[in-house]
Image (cartoon, rainbow, N blue to C red; front, side):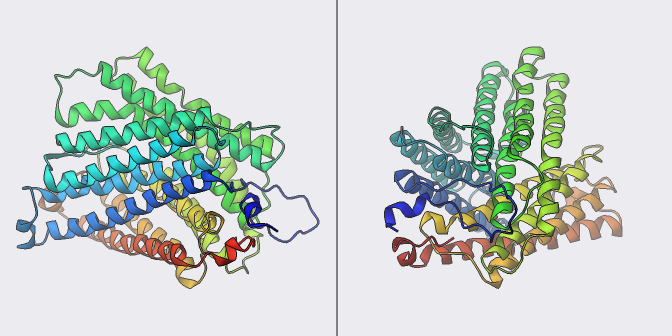
Amino acid sequence: MSAASTDNLAPTQPPSTGLDQVQFAIPIPSDARRTLARGWLWLGLLALIGSGVFSVLLVLARTPGINRLLPGTDFFRVALVVHVDLSVLVWFISIAGLLWSINSSRAGLLWGWAALALAGSGTFIMSIAAFVAPGEAIMANYIPMLDSKVFVAGLLIFAMGATVLVLRSLLGAPKVGPLTDGTSAMRFGMSASAVATAVALLAFAWSYAVVPHSLSGKTYYEILFWGGGHALQFTWTLLMLVAWLWLGSACGVRTLLSPRLTVLMLALALVSVFVTPYAYLAYDVASVEHRNLHTWGMRLGGGIAIAPIALSTWLGLRNASKSSEVVRPLRAALISSMLLFAAGGIIGAFISGNNVKIPAHYHGCIVGVTLAFMGLVYHLLPQLGYGSVRGKLATAQPYLYGAGQLMHIVGLVWSGGYGVQRKVAGADQVLRTAGETAGMGLMGLGGMVAIIGGLLFVIVVIQALRQTQSTFEAGVNPS
C-alpha cells in the first residue's frame, strides 16, 4: 500500500460479528486539507494551553502580595474573561475548523489558510490585551469581554477568521449523497453545523446594527451576544452529536438508528436554529419576548435531537468490546461526555431564579461538548499523522476531568438551592450557612480536579504529537 493512499482509509473498524454495522466516520484526506486540519488542531491546543496559563493567573490574582505585581486593579476578572474565551470560544471554533477542513473539497484552500491566520492572530491579540490594555472586565453571557480597544480588535479579527471559515465550509462542502450510509450522515451533520454557525454570525451582525449604541457595559454586550450566542449552541450540539457517533463507531457501538433516522435527528436540531432570525423579525432585540424565544428554541430543538442519538449510542456502548488499548480512552471520553451533558440538561430543567444553578447547567453542557471533542481528537491524531493515544493516563484523563466537573456542578446546584447568586466571588457571595459553604467548597474542589484533568489532556496530546510518524509514512494505518 502506498503512503499516498494511507490517509484515505476509514478509521480501523471493530471485528465483524456477521451482522451489518453502520460506521459513522469520514475518511481523512491525504492532501493539503489534512495539513489545514492539523493547523486548526494546533490552534485549539494552544488555546487550551493559554487557558491553563490564565487559570494559574486566576490563582495568583487572589494571592496576597503577588496580585500587586499583576497589571490592572482587578486582574482576577480580566484573567477570567480571557480564560473563558480561550477555553470555549477559540477551542470550539478550532475543532469546528478541523472537522470542516476534513469535510471540505479541495477548492478554496487559500481561503482556509486565511481563516486560520485571522483566527490565530485574533486569539493572540485577545490574549495579550490582558497585559497591555486590560480595561474593565465585563462578564457578559456567551462571550465575556474586556472593555479594551486591543481586546475588541482581537475579537473582531477572530470573528473575521470564523466568517471566512464558515463561508468556505459552506461553499466547499462535498455532496452528501444518498443518506443510506454513516459517512453521508456525518457529512450532513458537519454541513448542518456550518449552517448554524452562519445563522449565529448573522445574528451577531443583526444585533450590532440594531442595539442602541447609547447602551454601554454589560447591558450592551448582553443584548449584543444573546441571539448569536444561543445560535452557536446549535453548532456545538451538532458537532457533539457528530463526535458521539464517530466515537461510538470507533468503540464498536452497534447503533439502533439507521443513517436516515440519524440525519432526521440532525435536521431537527438544524431546523430549530431558524427560530433565531424569526426572533429578530418578530420582536425588538431588547425585549423580554425576544430573549425568551431564543431560550425556548434552544431547549426544544436541542432536546428532541439529542435524546434518540444519545440513547442509541449508550445502549450500543454497553455491548461493545472494551479490550482494545486504543479504544479505552475513546470509550472513557464518550461515557464522560454523555453523562456530563445529561447532568447539565437535567439541571437546566429545574432552574429558577438568578442563582448558581444557571452556571451549573451550562458548565455541564459545555463540558459535555468539550469531552466529546477531546475524545475525537484522541481518535483523529493517528489519522492526522501523529502517534496513537493509549495507556492508563489517556484512559484516566476523561474520567478525571469529567469527575471534577461533576463535583463542580453538584456544588453549584447545592449552593443554588440556598439561593447563592451567580457571577459573584469572595465575600460578595454572602455564604451564611454551613450548607452554602460546603456546596461552594465542593464546587472549588471539583474545579481543581477538573483543571488537573484538562492539563492531562494537553500532556497526552503533546506526547502523541511528539511520537514518530514512521509507521504512518510507511503506509500502515495507525488508528
